[in-house]
Length: 122
Image (cartoon, rainbow, N blue to C red):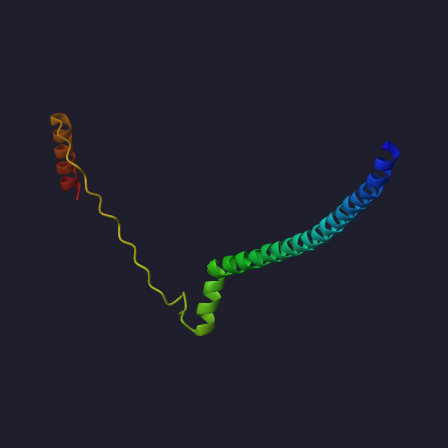
């Protein structure tokens, strides 16, 4: 009887083994396809990242150009919004320094002596 039972289970075991192998093969193909798709997407994203970095470098260089005094000066000159430097008259005033009076008696007396001395000389 024992041999009979083994003969009945042998085809079902073989079918079960074939089904497992088929399922593993399908999983292997699916994994490979997904890995290929993710690799393509990663390559595309890296290319996009590099393009954005290059574009950012160009934009920073352009921004530095627009911030430069030389570019602003050239734009002003091409529009005729400047005048000759030789014709300018620049006046400089001496800054008026306000002195804070010192509360010390000796310093106050010394300040008065210097003021009187300056008045006599002038």
